[in-house]
Image (cartoon, rainbow, N blue to C red; front, side, top):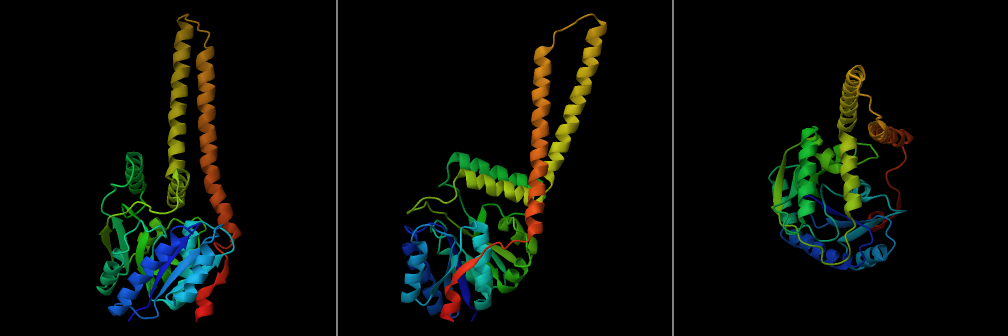
Length: 317
């Protein structure tokens, strides 16, 4: 039988983590009892530099339940790095891996179904939301717009799938070969290939604690995904520059015609509007180019994506 490691990124989750550990370890034990997975399977919590009691909860739980383990980052490195850090630490101990957030919004009952699909020969099993009934109208609209945009610029993504997924050992091996610091796993995993399928589930509302992904972070993740996989924003700026240049030529022709016809216009307003318009476009262009240069700068430094301060996996083996 295969060893399963469930990787759970956690940041300031002291309110929800006790229930999450109980529910997830019960699911793990049920699969062990059903002989679907090996008895040495683990639940690995990745403490992403939490400022509350998250890590102490993990340490205490690991002493009481041998199924529970954890790693502790030296500081907060972000959700995507927490996922990749957990997979990196778990790979020597497991054969198949499932990543799920600690808030229990993703349906844990989908985990046995994922294992069934893995046993049927699939290397990647995506947890896909069957509906967005719990989202606000604004969030549904922006999510749909984001997936459509990513598809148009050539980024392969699984609609309504986040980071709740199963990956086999060989997929994780390939995933860990991607060394970029600006991680967008929702776009990277589909690029790896291997047989994949989906498991649909209804996402729940958060019961305890506060969301660690407010609108600001969601927008930052979306922008990181776009700029990490496509140069479309730079193409857009180029198109915008050409368009404004054509407008300026048109305005020159119009001004010349008006001059020869004797229609002299003061033109203060049009000049000011043109200056502000062109200045705004220039700033947008510089910002977009700077975003890509910044990514190149960060990648060339080769700094670690995460630093593990404590590793209970090593202590338990």
